[in-house]
Length: 25
Image (cartoon, rainbow, N blue to C red; front, side, top):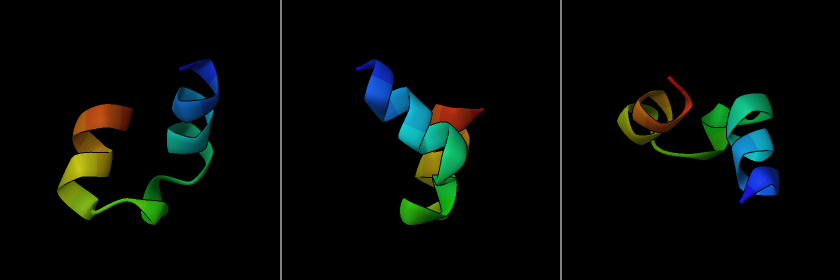
């Protein structure tokens, strides 16, 4: 899931706010 972590890091706004913050830190 390295690509997923990369997407979360670069494009956290693609996910719901609270979810993105909890996953991306």
